[in-house]
Image (cartoon, rainbow, N blue to C red; front, side):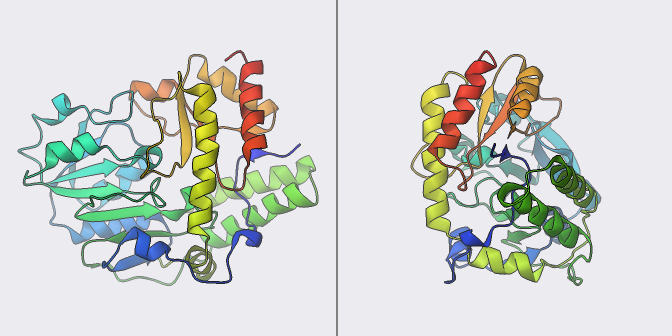
Length: 331
């Protein structure tokens, strides 16, 4: 049975012969600096900013997002994220006058427009994490923006920032992280197309996990392989397929999902908030559906959140299988 989720495979059937306009989409009329990871891009961005600064950070986050900010020498305070993944303005208001920078996350590809309205005409710098919204198109932009490409595009490595000058000298690309991640993605492709044995599956999981531990904040350059895939990835087709998959999932699960798709957003995944999350996650895994938890932290959302894959390599039949499996799990 086809695996849904897990390590995304390296499939060159998705790569276009023509260059696509993803760079123009990400930062029109802005210079982009590319890195091997979103973590190194974040570190170099915050190293470029006045230090030490007080950075307001969302309390729904992955530790790997916060680490580069702290390693760059900045102080952080947290503002609360509500159950609908919008900022709690009441928790933010008392902090805003003291802070220099606010870190904003486009959760799952969606933009918190109410937060931008609140920040309008306030003297605070904005850094937007667009890891989940690389394919989304928004009218407003941050003073600086950053992202990891790997949550949207199936590349072994890659990240970027834009909006400020880079004061980090780029090294050569990391010698191990993208190589081992590439190996894992090739094994994932083999498992999907030629050999569905548990041995191959165990190997791609092993090497994928090992490669993740190798990511650091060092300012390493993006690998040539990832750079080529990113610049030739079919942006419009991928965005349309993701939106179609998400809309189908939402039509069946709207009571569990607080994010209805709008005209500007392209989803990274579908977040659902459910009881017995851990039990359902394991039951889905037994059906070869791997739904991750983004992210595990102290915010209460994390205890109920499950993310359903809606990547462009899947179709409506795969989405129907997810729904059927969830119903069989008692949802």
